[in-house]
Image (cartoon, rainbow, N blue to C red; front, side):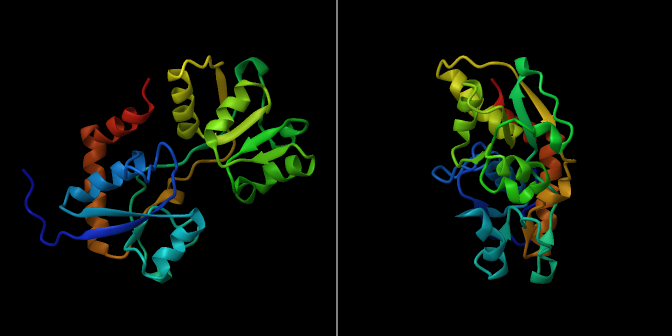
Length: 233
């Protein structure tokens, strides 16, 4: 049994708008929501999620609209009072292609002649890889990431750029609807850095309590159970 917290708090936290399976604003659920909520609850804190367009998340923290944020979007927010926590979830962007195509994508030039569909904003993050594809007229960004799975299966695009868990989630949804899916290959193309996905808090004590709760989720197997809830067949 855990001791009662000395100072439980309501923690308003900025999340991105609708990022299945990480955030579902309509039900305040999703992998990221549940991990954050349970890690904070370990010491009695209560999560109050607030949803923003991605670009607004660091702004909402900086201007005091929220007490915490899921990400700093690559901006060092220390000067704005950010106390960085341990990474709870990570977005692992990979190139995904049909296995039967046997595509080898090891360097940007390997995308020459291929069409690529990606999430909105990817070209700003990976210009070295994607700008040549855009200039060739073979690059498209779409908001509906379920459409990425469908169009890849139909052969309308050669390559999808997506977080591997987001792609897997939508593929599972299609499979449950009876859609026949082809095997795919995933190709990592940038080194995953966990420090890119650290949540930030205004209160250092809340940050410390969150870190302890996250550690407990990992050690107990609860973190994996939350992932499995959304991603296991």
